[in-house]
Length: 306
Image 1 (cartoon, rainbow, N blue to C red):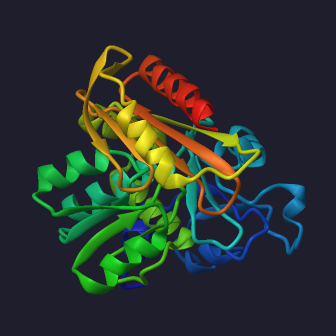
Image 2 (cartoon, rainbow, N blue to C red; image 1 turned 45 degrees about the horizontal axis):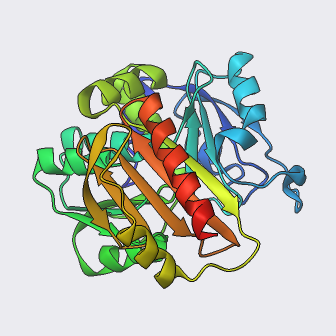
């Protein structure tokens, strides 16, 4: 309760849906908010070792039940945690998925502007550059790490870190454990909404007007054989394009795979998964057309590597 201000929430109780995806976060958010006046409708909240036959990952394609619950009027927004409750996602009142990139950016803004907190910011190489723009605005030190929360945790244990997060939804902040925590980030989101008096969709719109736009997509290419990461990095660095989608490639990073960073802050990352036989292609752009161009180029060169 030192992390989440329940007084703010009690002054403006929220009505929302919590989707635990049958995972270990079942009941945690509702239990914590008892006595605040919040109306919480829980789905996929039973013990189910098979997770209902669905991969318990908080990404849009697995969140049909949450979208339906919000659209049916059971809440004004939705919060979702994954199987082991270390990751977060959300659904706005319009049925739009609010990804961890936006949740981390909203959280960073809130921690600095409303809670008056400070410290370094840590994000993985596959996480939105909205974080970079906010860190620069606030004069905060920014660290970029390889994919995996363990790399973020190293900084959290050694330095004064305000917030750390990754693309897949693992986020944590100052005063808490050096590990992603879905329920705590969900509670912080509830606090943000209560404090702002706005809907989640309005908050996201304001964020994107302020530091965006930032559109993101990821494609996974199944591998028929292992890819030698060092050789892939060398090939993609040597074959780096001058431009993609009409934007010049300003920078090439080899931190974890190969990342092309464009003049307009759009980017493309290609890297082998560390957990499954998949080559991941990540793209963030300021327009949907740019994301399409980045992903298209990324998939083409990735397939040539495979």
